[in-house]
Image (cartoon, rainbow, N blue to C red; front, side, top):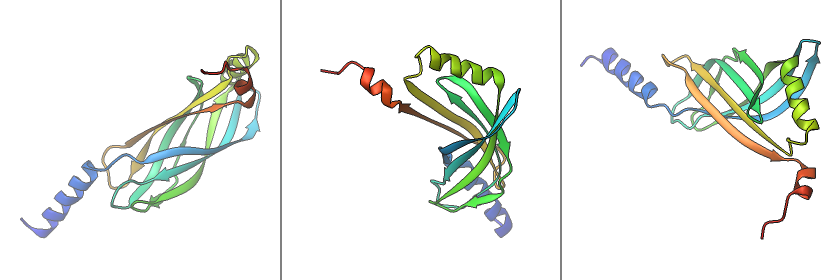
Amino acid sequence: MSKPLLSCALGLLLAACAQSPIVTLTDIRPLEFGVLEQSYLIKLRIQNPNAFDLPIEGLSYQLEINDQPFARGVSKPLLTVPSYGSELIEVEAFSSLAEIFQHLSQLRKGRASEIRYRLVGKLSATDRLSPLSFDQRSELVLPMARETRPKEE
């Protein structure tokens, strides 16, 4: 087998065997609050669990809070996450007035003693034909919710 063909086959094999990156939400801050649209600065940590560098050319993402859509966005960060390493990036996400009202309504009804969130999306890597998916879930218990929860025996 010729050397160029062998390296091409090896590259395709590595790309096919790539583990999905671990993308976690590290911070969210409001940027602008308009009448119909709100924007947020979101910090994401991208971890590469692979033995090779992961060159990222774009990503799309959606943030859900308490199983309801909250904000979404796309970004073209152009960065490389080193093998077994991580990078912190800042991206923008957008939500609508309807989504904000839905979450405020849940808070006022007392349904939001716990805040569950889910970050789901796809990363496009320059050396891959198909995007790599990510899906991260977590939960925050509000301090007032701890006081009102029944004690477990």
